[in-house]
Length: 154
Image (cartoon, rainbow, N blue to C red):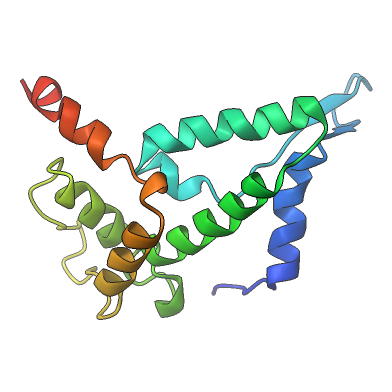
């Protein structure tokens, strides 16, 4: 069963990273640095190059103790892209197939097959992927993949 969290709660969770704080969770009693950066999850299965860059930006914001508007805007864009990638509106029905579709479009997979043959992209998921790719091309690493795919496959 999937619990839906409000946008406000998601924002609070994401902001944990931006206000990194000490938590006394080690058995020794010494403080441990805790940082959570939500919404990059999708970028660790596809579009990895920008994810690495955005994580570095988030760490830079933490170190500087300030968050600029562009980083906050990026956060909502990544949330939107992950919604399409993981098929949130259809209860995550096409979560794996959606990731496979992005990799297929990049030439890294030949198809979107899953171990469960019933797991396919939902009827609206392809259009949603098209929308986020068109609206947020900076989240994708298609050019990077295209420039390197032959070398990787050789």
